[in-house]
Length: 71
View (cartoon, rainbow, N blue to C red):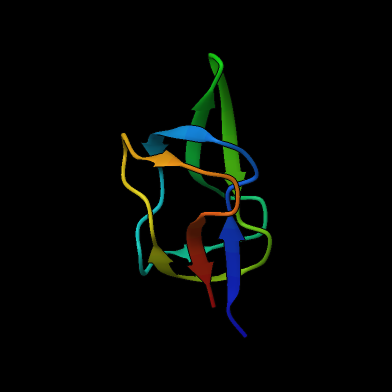
């Protein structure tokens, strides 16, 4: 079953750490968001393979936007 990871707030995508196809473990950092001068890591919530990374560095995400899909 695929797990969708979505943005919890409006933020800029500061750094992309993982790439589609990567094996990830629960707790691994996928991307780092920046909001109000704070860095917010977006973490994998389960073990699996990163099937889709829906953001690029410099993107602006809104609350609820898709960031990644893990299978």
